Amino acid sequence: MREKGMAGGSRYGCPTCRMIFPSWSALTEHRLHMRHSCTFCCGARGTCLFVAATRAQMETHQAASHHAGVVGAETTTAECVRVALTALAPAPEDDCHAQSDVVSRPVMRAQVARDAETQWRASDANVASLWWSTSDAAKQRLAQAFAATLKKYKTTHNVKQAREEAIQTTRDILAPLPIETYGSCVIGTDLVTSDVDLHFQNDDADTDANANANANGDSTTSVDRFLSRTKQEEESTKGGIDAATRRRAKHVALLIDAASALENDERFRDIETVVHSRVRVPLLRANFLSRGGETVQVSLTAGTANVLKSKAMAEVVKRLPMLRRFVQLTKLWAAARGMNDPAGAGSLNSWCWLILAYHHAASVSHMPTIVPPLDELLPCDNLPDAEHEKKWLQFVSDECEIILGPVVESDDDDDDDDEQEADNLKLVDLFTTFVARMSISREFWQSGVIVSALRGCALVRPFNPTEGTFARWPGAALAVEDPFEPDENAARTVRDTSTADMMCAEFARAASLLHHGSDSEVLGGLGRETRSSGADATTPAKLRSLEQRRMLFAFSADESDEDRVIGELFRSRQNFVQGHDWA
Image (tube, rainbow, N blue to C red; front, side, top):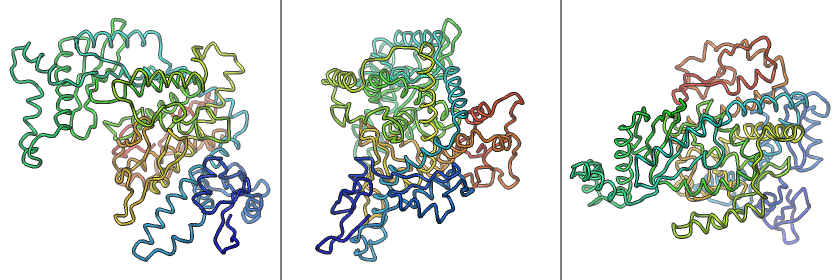
C-alpha cells in the first residue's frame, strides 16, 4: 500500500497495523520482523492458495474468480502456490526505473530478489491452507500412519550396542589418534538406518603418518606419496604447494593409513576411501559386523568442524522432541526418494536437511512457534577457536536451558495418549507445509533468496549489476546458510540446476500426495496409472508432468487411503541422478 506524502514523495503503509514507512525496504523489514506479510487466505475448495493483505483485496479476488462460494478453480497445488506468490509481488520502487538501459535489467532483478524475500515469508500462509483444507478424519489417520512409520525406523537397543562396539573398535585400532563422534547419532536425530560418523581430532597428520610409516619400516609416508602426485602441477602454477593443499594431503593421508589398519580386522568390510577433488571433506566408509550380528556403516572424516556443531545442535534437539521427530521424518523421506546422498547423487547431506527443517519449524506462523531462531541461542555467528570450545558449548547449553527448558528424556511410547495424538497432528502439519513450501523454492533461489535458520527468515544475496551474478555463492544452485558458519553454503553439494529441479519436483509430488490424501478417487488413480508413452528415458526429466513422473504402484485391497499415501510417499526410488526413474 503506497500513498503520496506532503512533499510529493511516496510513503509506504503496512496493511496489517497501519504503520507508515518512508521506503519500501523499511516496510519489508517491518513486515518480515512482525510477520505482517499477509492476513487473508482464500482456500476455496482446498485448492486456491491466494492470499491478500486486506479484506477488500480478498473480496475482489473471490468475486473475479467466483470463489465466494464452494466453487474453486481446477488446478494443481504447485500452480496455486505460484499464482498466489505472483499476486503478492509488490511494486518496485520508483528509483529502479530511473536507471540507465544498460543496468536496468540487473537492477530490476535485484529488486525481484528483495520482493522474493517478502514472498517467501508470505508463502507460509499459502502452504498452511493445505493443512486447513484437509478433513479432521484424514488428519488423524495420516498422523497415525506417520507415527507408525517413525516407530518402524526407530533405533533399537541392539543397534545402539552395535554402534558403540563399532566406535570402540575403531578407536582401539587407530589409537593413539583421538577420534570423536558427530552427526545424527550425537544430535539425536538418528534412525535405525543411520551410519556412525567419526572424526579425527588431530591436525598434525604428517607427524602421525610418519610415525606409522616408520613403525612399518617404510621411510616414505602416505603424505609424501599424495603430495608427489600434485607437486609438479602446483609448482608450475603457483611456485609451490600452498597450505590448503598440504593440509588436505594430511587429511587424505590419515584416511589412507586408517583404511590399511582397518583392513586387518575381519569385522570391517567393504572399505572405501572417497578422496577425489570433488569432495570437500575426504571420507572413509566401511561396514562393521558386530558380535550380535548387526551391520553398522561407519564413516570416518578429517578436516571438518561438524563435531562442535553436532554438540551444539544436540543441546537444542534433546529439549525439543517435536523438532527431533520432524527432522527424522524429513530425513527418512529424503533418503527414500534418493535426495540424501551428497557424495553419490549430488543431493543434500543430512546437515542441510536439518537446517531446512529447523528453518521451517522456526518460521511457520499459522501455529505456535516450535523453535526460536538460532541466533537467540548462539553467542556468535561463527565457531570459536579450540581454546574457547568448552566455554562456548557451556554458553549454548545454558541459553537452551533458559529459553527451551530442561532436557526431555521421556520415550515416545510412554507419552500420554492425548498429548501424543496432538504431537502427531503437529508433525503432519509441519511436514505437509514443509514440502509444499519447498516445492516452489526453486524460483526463490533463482531470485537470490537464502534460507537462514540462524535468523529464522529468508535473506537475499547481494546482486552485482555489472557482472549479472549474485555476490554471495554466485554459482550455487541452492542457497542454505550454515548457522554456525554463515560464510558456508550448506547446500553446496547440489552443483547443477537439474538436480535442484528434480528435488523441487519431489517436493511437489509429496505435497500433492498429502494434499489429496483424503480423496479416494485420486488414490485410486495412483494405483492404476502407468507410464505415459511419451515419457521415456530420452525425455528430459524436468519436462515431464507430475503424472508422468509417477510409476505404477499396486495398492493392496485391504489398505486404507492414508496407508496408500504413506506407502507411495516413502517408496524407494533409484537412479536419481540419471533421471530414468522419476516416480
